[in-house]
Image 1: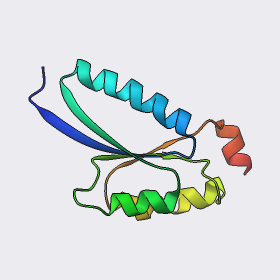
Image 2 (image 1 turned 90 degrees about the horizontal axis):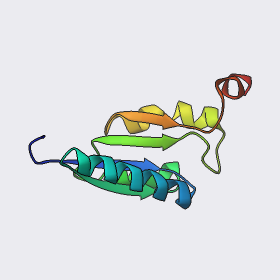
Image 3 (image 1 turned 180 degrees about the vertical axis):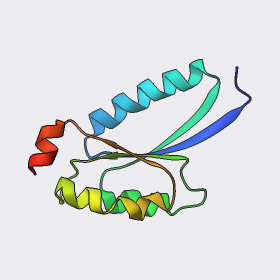
Image 4 (image 1 turned 45 degrees about the vertical axis):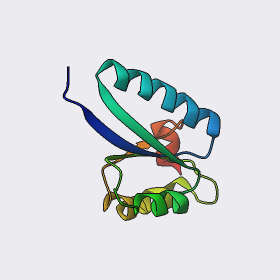
Length: 102
């Protein structure tokens, strides 16, 4: 079992039901590992960036590629703004082919 460790995760996702699903799954898995997990949720890229800039910064950022108000390629282009605050993992319901075609 891991030492008492706590992780702060920032999830940028515009659909609350998906954010809740991920939160439940991640909390359950973290508990199995003896890991403390705090999850902050933001529904837009800008809101997520503001939360990432808080102290302490997140240990990990999960970013939905299909956020409202911007195209997926615009979201991808803005990832460096978030990477300054923690590693970014991109989530999407799109296929690789759909992303390439855009």
